[in-house]
Image (cartoon, rainbow, N blue to C red; front, side, top):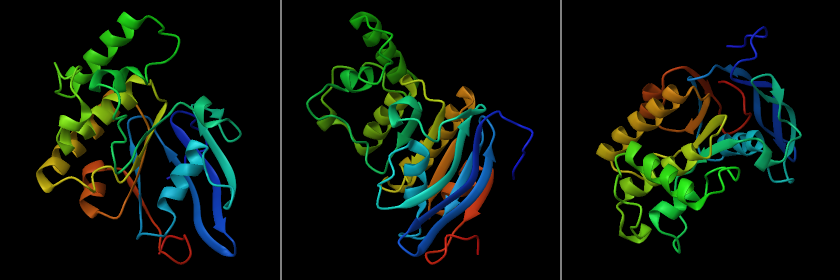
Length: 223
């Protein structure tokens, strides 16, 4: 799975995460652009902890080491906001006091400061996830699948360099889960993003394609 001569995509080198005396994760991997690495394991095995370390927001109660690099650039000591990491969680986490369009525009990079331009970018992003004309809607009026699409649009307009997926399909019904898998992985491929997916669902892994790293609840090792 490793390719030491390649710097394109995401490189995870010597990642080790422990909680007290318990080892949760040991992992080295190369995730090329437009590819997905799926990390599978039961609840409590450390899957989400790995994403927190990559994203730079790991709780200090954990003891972690290892190098995180994207495109050859070491991110290990960077603040979370400087890593340009896009994250989708189980819940969409939309701001209830903002319209759908404002939720998406909130993530547009600060250098695009014009209000009109940010609105245009948000509207275009919503159209790309089949929510054209939804900008003025209240998030509370959306279905679960629509909220998931808004969350995806918000992540993409932030111009991330990598995408972390923390079981984002788990709370959707079967039909919506299939649609969102296809949409998320297609968008990631089209934008050339390396992706880390954590899940306990074999169907997620099959839809993602690519390498699968399996961990158990006891050791963090591949069984």
